[in-house]
Length: 133
Image (cartoon, rainbow, N blue to C red; front, side, top):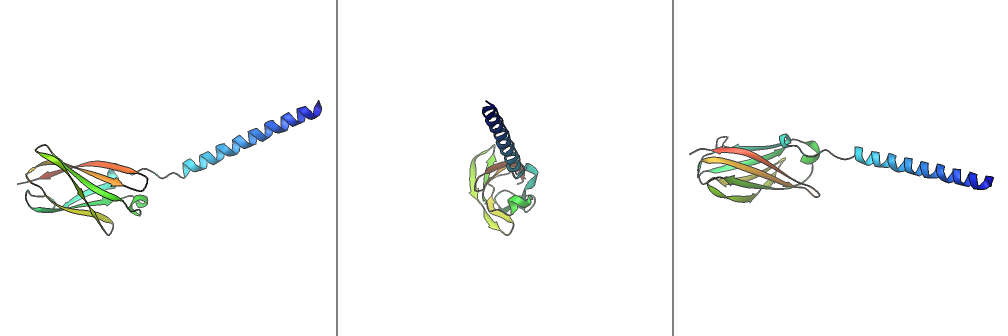
């Protein structure tokens, strides 16, 4: 009878130890998780700074997050306006930024949605852009 009690107590200790190790390992993997890319870490700029309709504009996307800036992404720009159908254009990586040229058809308040696809993640950020005559 005493042997059975010792075996049961030994088994319980082993189970408790096993569960403790599992909890510890689960905590370690959570702390190793990288932060998500935030809206303010993705910057859309244009050249010229105040774009004009029917003129080529260089659109540049810069990532101000060291983890994501070091990784390659497929970046597309979705150009939306109230007066036109949306357009989806691809960018090209130039140094630390992604660029594309676009000629806006008319003066309007545009929303440029930056789509960033990494190996295992996708982000989209809507950025306003005013285009003048």
